[in-house]
Length: 125
Image 1 (tube, rainbow, N blue to C red):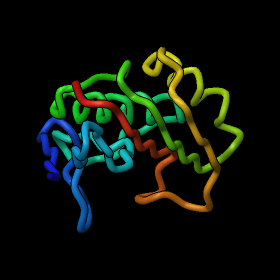
Image 2: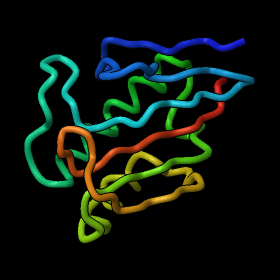
Image 3: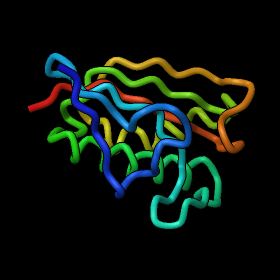
């Protein structure tokens, strides 16, 4: 059985997808970009500011699913510029202290021209 995860404390899906799906004891969360849920605006600032907002959004989806950052087993991180890798890691390591498996790549362009996007897979408690 699939269970959709939805919270108003994270940005609404901007396309034909869910914020997350729980299946077989795992949360598969859609990629989060630095949208401020209350306003729909992009968090203005450098990679550090945008990565912080992404982590807040992920945290809310994890919470809604009944799990947390410590239960994340895999992340996929997308950066607009690999030159932001070090600064992005500075934010990332504050949240993903359990050091889940990860892929991190630079891409040509991200939705709404943001600097980063992160998706997660987590166990559900």
